[in-house]
Length: 149
Image 1 (cartoon, rainbow, N blue to C red):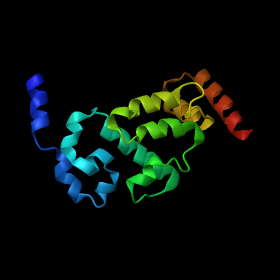
Image 2 (tube, one colour; image 1 turned 180 degrees about the vertical axis):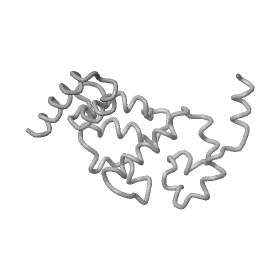
Image 3 (cartoon, rainbow, N blue to C red; image 1 turned 120 degrees about the vertical axis):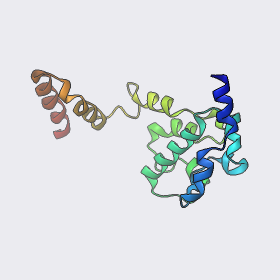
């Protein structure tokens, strides 16, 4: 296993090779990669690049396109309940970044930013095929009454 991981770190990264082929991909690069190149990821948590990219996606969902990394770190138009976790996703220090997994976990907690009627309906619809007839009727009656009120 150790030899395999050593080889991974010594080989060229696919992202480094293909990033130049994607127009404007450099604006999605985390600050540490923009500053020092792809070799820097060897010194940081493996989740740091994905966390920053997920933060960029969240930024674009709530704000539209961005042109610079400085825009991503601002929490403009990000829902207040999500702002603290969002800021940790896009932290300039990759070692302090929240992983995507932890971000999703925080949002899914009772009272978290994903604890909304829309998310509950979506999750219920996903498992609708596994429910028996009585459970389906209860789900549809309960969740759609929430939406009508």
